[in-house]
Image 1 (cartoon, rainbow, N blue to C red):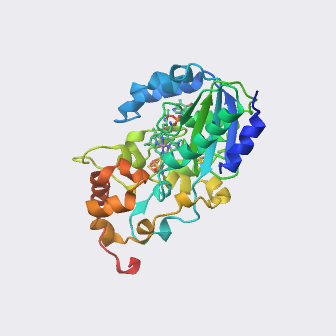
Image 2: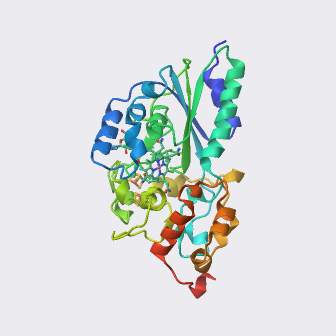
Image 3: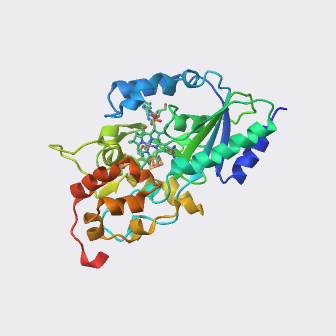
Length: 313
Ligand code: B12
Ligand code: SF4
Ligand code: SF4
């Protein structure tokens, strides 16, 4: 039996995804060239894993030769709070306030795949969330979910850019959506003007300069380097916070898993300064923050070191 795109979308909506689009698996062309030149210019910094699997990231058929269709999904993680709601002077990216999004999206995508397997005679599927060697923003654009903004994140018209992306790649043909080939950034340059480290030219990031990379992906100390983390101890949201599409269209998500952990909200400067391995493990179990490990987070806190200010008690 041929399963319809409409029924897949209805099921994905029931599973909680706000955005769903379906596109044909194909070679990227221009996007592959962009990836190659990005890597050649060393914009990936020490993320060698991007180079190692560049042929798969640049061409889906090197990753999954039987691929026919890509179902791209988006899950809204904005929870209606911002940095001012945190009780410390340290800043902490909102994408990491709750449970690890990889698990949250994968759980839902596995349910979607199971449901499709149940309805189809024979189907092979692969689930991707972040770590798989695919260009997720490109697939989301091709599936009509939104456009890649000048800050290089994918923006939707109805939720802004506060959405995580994931894919289900299938070896069956489906009906496809139109790609989102409009660029609704227009003459705006708010993200470029606000980035404290000048990490973005239009549509092109130098990861090495990006605070998100420095606080999450960089390994070891920042020895001898003139590093400005702008008070961020994990990730960075500035280019998205200033984006008019987020200001106007952000919608508070009711997904329990993304609600902020109380310590992240309630910790003051002293609590962060005194963070020890035991507290770290308690707060960040099943959280994306485990990527930096205790050592990395402690390094970031030390780099931004703040004394307790009486007004933030
Ligand atoms: C590597 C990576 C990073 C790196 C590099 C970021 C980047 N923009 O590439 C670092 C560590 C800095 C990072 C940071 C963040 N990340 Co990240 N990251 C990824 C990852 C694993 C790969 C992205 C990638 O392929 N980059 C390589 C470049 C070449 O690709 P690209 O940016 O898509 O390139 C397109 C355009 O930028 C442009 N372009 C690039 N070069 C050139 C050159 C020319 C000449 C032209 C014209 C155009 C152009 O065209 C390309 C397409 O053709 C994806 C997951 C995935 N598997 O895709 C998540 C992902 C992009 N990250 C995500 C998130 C949430 C973040 C942060 C917001 C986290 C945070 N708050 O700290 C920040 C955002 C920083 C920013 N401004 O981008 C989400 C983004 C969701 C969304 N709505 O877009 C993703 C999709 C993960 C997910 N599953 O949800 N990330
Ligand atoms: S995440 Fe922060 S440092 Fe990175 S590009 Fe955006 S504003 Fe700049
Ligand atoms: S801040 Fe402006 S230029 Fe940057 S992504 Fe948003 S709309 Fe585009």
